[in-house]
Image 1 (cartoon, one colour):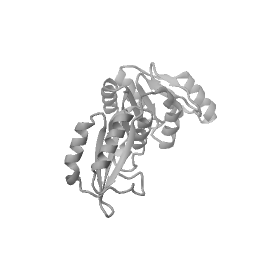
Image 2: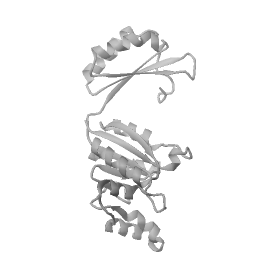
Image 3: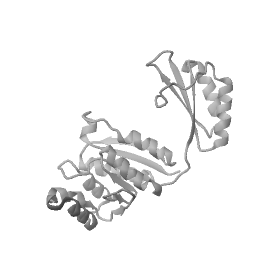
Image 4: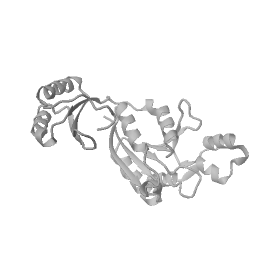
Length: 245
């Protein structure tokens, strides 16, 4: 299946001034379209670090999604870092420049027009609802860091990616992980096409363990679910908060 990495760029994330909302959203969204997210990396606004990280991730994964560092200010270094990663110049794209001038009018100063600068050879992907197209350099998609903008732009181009969607099931128990560890090991051995995860939750009583079953194969997934249901002690209904593991 297609593999992906997410590169979060920004001192504000590393300093704790702002919380990263983009990588959790991208993880869920990529799973929904069958792309396997294999790595999430958070780095500072440092052009050398950006260049090195982009080069490494681009070589290792099918798709790289960068977020942050795209804008008119001094600390917006992502475009320059991606350019350096691929050994190309940073150039002003005429289409982006025209869009910016049309949108900003008299406010299209030199700082604003920095947002028209892209790595030489980058292409623009159009999509429904996009005022400004998505910038793509080889297998690297360069997204803004603002969560609402990232989501809008990703959803507009998501149809360009395809994979087999991961199917999932969950079971819940009040049994301790140590009491079911051998059972889970046996289940994993019996059903190698199913990825089994175990996640305890201690912030409410009774303490619970959520088991997740993931597979692209519906047959083995159903068989594993039935096998565990027949053997898992102290099963309980799903917790009220479905989003919490």
